[in-house]
Length: 271
Ligand SMILES: C[S@@+](CC[C@H](N)C(=O)[O-])C[C@H]1O[C@@H](n2cnc3c(N)ncnc32)[C@H](O)[C@@H]1O
Image 1 (cartoon, rainbow, N blue to C red):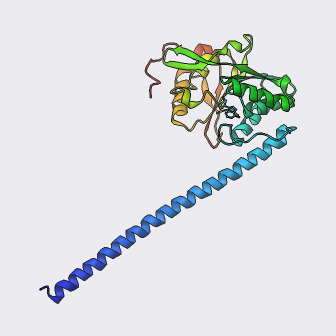
Image 2: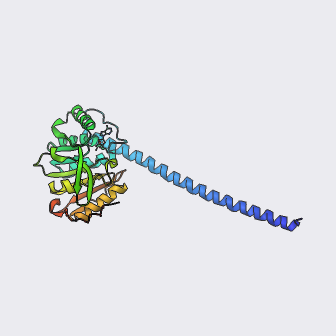
Image 3: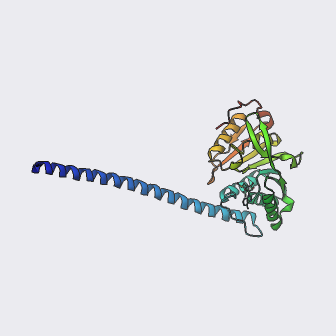
């Protein structure tokens, strides 16, 4: 039979163990609550930022009808607001966009505000090309934007292969001042948006601006790094942010055509 002393020792060990377990649970719960609080605050702040950006957008472009929803497939208000900012700062004459939608409407409205310029939006889905055309018509912006039917077709670059836009519908004589990249969708290929610069970069004017949406995603980080490596004349425009991440690059000196090297290490882009 256990002595009283042993029982007391066991009881003390049990109480001690329970105390340590309670402390651990307490610290784990506190940490989880703090994390949840931080996430909720960040989410609330982001909702407010998006509402503020949307209000600014309405004030700036003064649409004649309500804008379509800005969640899910569409560009976020803060990204759209960046488009208006860069248009007003750089006054581009020619904007080329990869993937049409609300961003096309916003860019076309900017062109109308500045009284000059045109947006060419490459769209691979005929259904959404038609929707964007309807949207542009509804807002009476037909003079400022063209939705180019650009089915995805196999493209082979030195370091990338896959489906990308057929750009033959773009006018051959344009010099691009602003390139906005929000497509093709990620599901179409690994590093689906990479070809934008190798293909369209040679048609950019020196000093042109490149804006890549969703730049926080792993694919887009790799794409941005590859572009900068291949084209040292591209530099970051600092202090620019958006909820899904945005890469803003400026082409500094010579045309991108000189800088995009055709002999990039073939495996460089593989994930
Ligand atoms: C990431 S979304 C970008 C759309 C566009 N840049 C914008 O900001 O609205 C990429 C693709 O979504 C598709 N899309 C366009 N309008 C859509 C809609 N109303 N509903 C669902 N998908 C749409 C198009 O095929 C487009 O190329």
